[in-house]
Length: 406
Image (cartoon, rainbow, N blue to C red):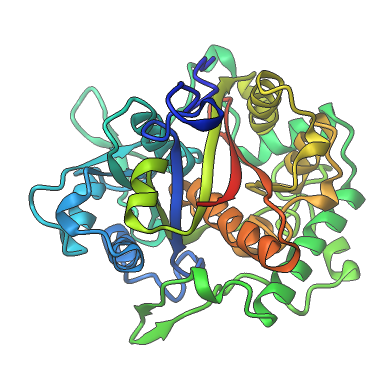
């Protein structure tokens, strides 16, 4: 269990907040999220991420040399420190280092969390943090056998065998069974995700957060996952995808995607000195472990601990973004927290947009930034927001934010 649940709570300014240690996210962008082996299939991880980093620097007007580090999550890449590679490809000077972190699906959110904790440690630093995944170009992986031959595998083992190490779809079935989430409810939730994403795209909701990329010889400026033609009768025809007679299908599960997303994290003091006008104050974060057989519930446990630590009830949250790897786990997690599942992921989630593994957690933060700004513009209200993600191997990460005018 991670005990560092509160950030930026030191004394030193009005309200008891030390502005030099209060982390704040002042900009957030992402690439289009596209199906693996689709429109972005020729772009490797740095090709996806570098334009996002470059646009973040341009958006905030920060001097390139003033970036203290680039912290990037990645799950199935080829190693070699994609953060450093992408930073140089984005035009950052050689003096700016980079570090790549791997907590599988949680990598992108954990990269943002790590940057926030480093800000809370002091020194008024500024970080670019986020995640990236090019599933299309992920390298083939293999173990060496005793005789030196290559034994290729599709995924790594996440925990020792005695703890159970189910494939993701099997784990989603375990959650559906354990928490009584029916096939009908899963289909209804997945269909809602598509409809919300389609409507958000139609209304131009995603436009300002997407950095267009050149893929397959053309400019890709929008997500390609949300399906306008999806209807309940079609959903009902899909067979069980992972367990015979089960309720988890291809229609109520996410699809693999290529994507990148990143944010600018700095101290409140430095953000104000830079002239930033608004941002997401990082109030706290938590990461915890759960039974690997029920890995999909990890996000809810992390979020529950985080909210309890801050004395908050789930219904006090204004915005919630949860990575919808499967409808079964999404419904189970939100209900575990006492949240109406229909109140989360207002513009659709990974069931419609796709799951870019290491990028997905950072996408959640980018979405919350956009939603919080939109809410303030419409109602003049400061939103309390939560991002959470379940992680292979039986873990979950959650982060709590407060939108503020600076």
